Length: 426
Image (cartoon, rainbow, N blue to C red):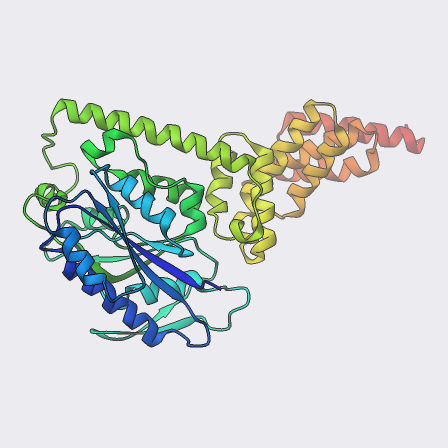
């Protein structure tokens, strides 16, 4: 059970906006305590990271928090960028789940409670399948996920009309509507801190790329935060783009900045490779594995012909979530078959037979040609092991599926002949 959460707020020269943001955070914390089960105590804290503000931001934040023991204020003497600021806040924070609003946006009162309910939900032991959320727009019944998740993303309210494509893109990348388990954040080692991010932004885009790769995300359409456009901020600078259908916007980004984005994307992929290597080497507890996007990771491994890794991910995932077997049995059968083929090439016929049988025992819904190939593979291995009585019906099934396969016909006739010889009928 989750017992704490932290709201990390980086802020730079927001003396006119920060108090309204903090007031919205306080209202959401109050709503949380009003609706949270009192028998399950939870500690909330707010960590403000002042990014070397030169206006009255620090003064206003200090005054606002002076009677609030759940506040911590961290000062950077100069602006290092929003990525380093968030990482500093996360290191100081004690919460098991983390929120990352900016210092000039708004949190709706139900936001923290909604995200907490979803991340705290344990489907294996919980009896509730949904919960009622009281909002200014009335009571809403929200379904809880049928599996543990590592990330929650909610809808984002924006007063400006935007093209649906870009609204969705914003909701899937900014951190304002994001709630993340600390385990996920620490696995990714936080937000990127390379200096170029301070020049071009996009920390959120890189972070989203990594969390989407590794962890299950629960997306809730309800708008629980507001992304506000101020003159000159990132939202304001891109407003025209966000209101234009994708593909029709004339990108006038200077060449030098585009080159920086190319470098950024290279850094993203390098970090992704590093995280994948880290993931393969690390010990994965059942608790950590339960929030992994194990199906996607397994399919990615299968596409790269990493069959043992594919099998390990699928098997551990099914052990934790047996109901998912039907959804993954076809790619798992392919992985078993390919792993069996690898053992056969190595001359390890016993292991090859084990994996071909595993593939068939799944009763996969593969196309006839693929299923026939697995039967053929098993039949030829059994033949090589001189298990002719077992090989014959297996090869017959291969022929039933692919009657015109020359390989299967030849193998079947050879085994049939060997069987007859052993019976003394030839």
